[in-house]
Image (cartoon, rainbow, N blue to C red; front, side, top):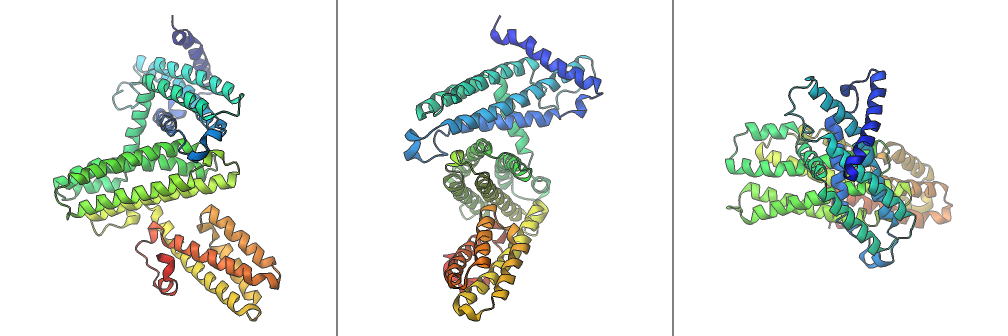
Length: 455
């Protein structure tokens, strides 16, 4: 008898005990966590873990990897393994209930369920493996600090074991298929009902699901940001998103090489989509996420994850909008992604109010004591009260710190402080103006006054 087979009765006893508790409380399978959602969540995190283990030192500075304490990466994978272990136990719990219902003819049609091909025996194998990995990682963490060679040995071993467990690949495939359904209905309707050429339709039906998968993964990051959950584990989700988007750009670039007519509007849209994705990926993975594993302050982690999420999510959404308008010029972007309207309005308001604040600060700097401190303080407070929350978290903190210093500064220190704040605001305005939601809203007044801001 194998170790896994010997372990199955113990796992089933644990799961059956949970089922008995549910029955005593009058709970049914439909009243507990949905099987489809559990299947997706488990596939999501396993896919992220699989991708993260391939990154090696991509989250770090290459030159420091040999002197770096890799226990941060061990801690990260340990947290994900614990999460996967809990999800697997919950999933096993519901699968046993589902199998029982099928055996008693309470469930007849299994073909529509993504989890119907996953058995409790397969999940027992995964549960055993996860338990083993958690115990091993706990032992390794007690030996910290850990070297690069130890991280490579651990990540290779774990990655190879993941590949050998059949149910892991089933769960990942199920999650990827679920991600493809994340395409907004209006886009699907455009493909189904619009009179576009068969060549266009064929290309878009292959491209759209790739965008949908990345947006689905990003939506989980967005929920974690909104719910103020621990965010460092999102590194494994970003690792998968990186793979998904690189695969997408690779597919698009290969298609462009074989495109029959480079003057075709779809060629230009596909080319722009691949270029934009590569630029945003570079920003995210070489700036925002670089070295994040070793960062400890929670506000800084939040700021970097928020920026990375916004850059990729907005970029993917606007690219899909461009494809939609290629099919139907009259379509409103907010019909596809309603959140874009809110972001657009907030960004317009932020840009206008920040421009006015910049002018106020520059006038105060030039005129010195002749400018009313009361007016300056009033404008600073108004901006913070009305608009600071439209900034990214990292920028919001910096603006607050500048404002606090100006409000409490002596007159002799005010001019150099205003100069630094003005320079910062000018740079920040340039970044805000580059937001994708403002692409169709040029700010001519600002361009004329500060053309160098947009170079």
